[in-house]
Image 1 (cartoon, rainbow, N blue to C red):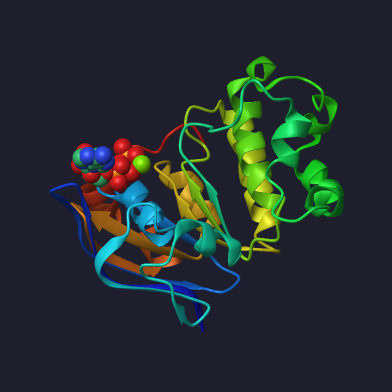
Image 2: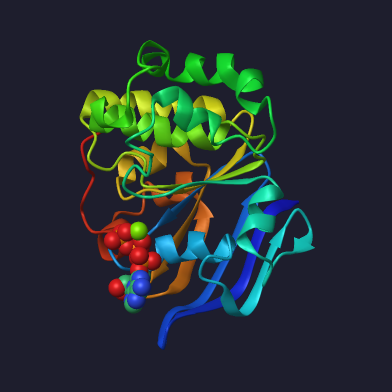
Length: 238
Ligand SMILES: Nc1ncnc2c1ncn2[C@@H]1O[C@H](COP(=O)(O)OP(=O)(O)OP(=O)(O)O)[C@@H](O)[C@H]1O
Ligand SMILES: [Mg+2]
C-alpha cells in the first residue's frame, strides 16, 4: 500500500495556478524521485503535501488518511519530515542546538544520536560550532540530520545534492540510502545520476502536471524522455 498518495492535486499561489494536476504514489519503504526542470513545480508539490501551499482541489492521503486541508503543524506531527531547499538551518545556533530544537518530543535527539552521527560523522566533530562555521556540504548534512531527529515515517527531501562537491554528493547519497531503511523518502533531485542510483520509482513533473511515472530501472534506459523532460544535466556525480 502507498504511504503517500496524491490524486489530481491543484495548487494556487495567490492567483497563480501552479500545480495543475499532480498525482503521485509513494510505496512504504521506497525512495521515489520527483523529477522535472526548474520551475516545474517540484518544491510546490512538497509544500502542498505539508499544507504550506494547500491544495485547492484534489487529495493528499497519508497512511490511508485524507490530510488535504489539515494544518502544517498537524501534518508534520503525523510523522512527515521536510528538508527544504538551500540548507535551511539556524546559522546562529550550534550544530547541537539545531538538532535539539528539531525535537518533536523531549528525548528525540538522544534516542537518534547514534544513528544520526553514524550517517554524518562530521557533525559529531562539529557539534559545538555555529552553523555559520560549517561548509555548504556540512550545512546540507545538518539540514538532513534535523529531519531525522523526530520519528518521521516519511521524509520529503528537496535537492540534497545541490551545490555539493562530488565527494560530498557521494556521502549524501550513502546517507540517504541508509536512512531509507528507517523512513520512506520522496526525493526532489535535479541530478539525474543521483536520483537514478537512489530511487526505485520516479515521477516527472512538467509545467505543474505529473506526466509520467514508473520504475526507475525503465527510465534510465529511456534517453529520449530524460532529454526531453529533464534536460541533459547529469550534475556532478558519476
Ligand atoms: N510565491 C510564488 N509566487 C508566484 N509564483 C511562484 C511562487 N513560488 C513558486 N512560483 C512559481 O511556481 C512554479 C513552480 O515553482 P517550484 O518552486 O515549485 O518549482 P521547482 O520545480 O521546485 O523548481 P526548481 O527546480 O527551480 O527548484 C514556478 O514557475 C515558480 O515561478
Ligand atoms: Mg524547487
